[in-house]
Length: 124
Image (cartoon, rainbow, N blue to C red; front, side, top):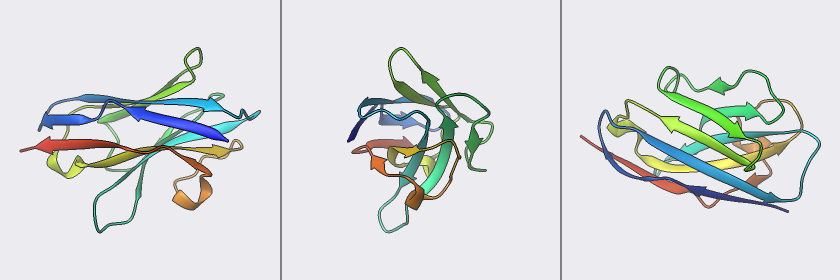
């Protein structure tokens, strides 16, 4: 099993920034990707950003391009989501997820392991 623990969520004013962290532990894979998704009540979970743990260019949802940056720290087994210029529409529970393999995916069904989520609230 893979354990994922998110942190860094909170309340921020519009235009502000937050950095989310996702620490991974447990089972390891020769290759995997880590993604960030978000969900608001009554809506489906949606893709935000994804990165291949071994390298290569990340991918972002259109809503995140230019404002969010996904990165990884090999030493800490942690992936980050730096979120700048936050908007009220970014309010959601943010989840990190792991997909074994090297292929980036924006689909929630492609991911096998999920964290518990961290709440991000952006006030106007």
